[in-house]
Image (cartoon, rainbow, N blue to C red; front, side):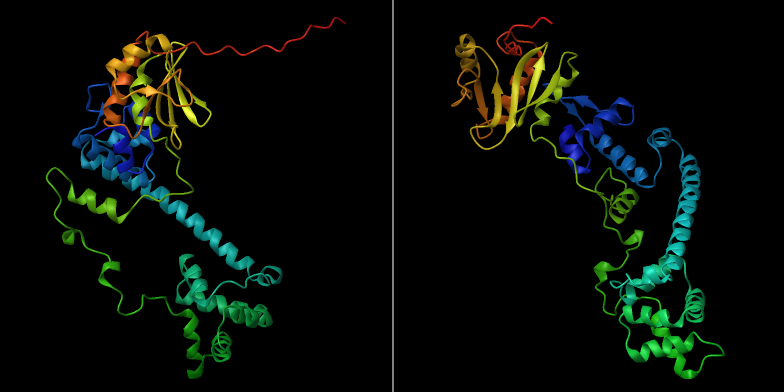
Length: 356
């Protein structure tokens, strides 16, 4: 498969795979006819491992060192990474506890009007609070400021009876049978009965058989722990795969031009890639009119552009667009003299210089 296909399959950008190639993390197994990188099933499996290990937080240099090494080395690296994650989680829990304590302050408490009871309990439990911690927290709140404890419980949407039960449960001395109703706030959140089986976790042994050459354990982990996407994804030009072979040319330069991308080779504007609506959706061949006849004979899919007739145009709708586009790129790689024009030089402002 090509680099663009592999990148889309794993939710990565093409530039990421090129970077992996440069640092030796993932090399293409071969090249196709026109110089395109060709990735084998083994490369695909290696990239799946890289993506999975990357989600654990391991740095790329460590992943590169671990690939192909004994499992003992991987286990040791994951144990070290686990200690790092535990420290980070503990730091986050301390931060959450601090936030909870700050929320007791009157000025902040006045603003907490959008948390439900279940959301608040989930926040406390995520902070590491057990049943004993929750009871202590309510007792401390009731002792230090009972009025705002009342308002806080009202903000959570509890009924008057539940608020009364929670507050009685939070007061010394020992609780009464009636005050046990305060557990309505302290009870752990459980999934409702009748949860469909598709939402329940599956054991590794229950996973479907993997195709030949695949790693069932790796497939299971990849599906169980999908990569989290933060923010928007980078927009990829639909014709990046076409100009990819040109990137090996040391004179290649890609520049934005209007709403497309202009490819320069040896300083000459050679090809223009545009993905707008017709007639600006395809590849424009930058050439001189004197070369039109020979290029049209070699590439009958081309035609003078309807708006810019000095250049030839290969629309995306043309039959064999992919193969013809690849042949044009191969022609450009050979620096065919029929392709390319000298870019116009910027005009200098007219006017006489003033002497002072």
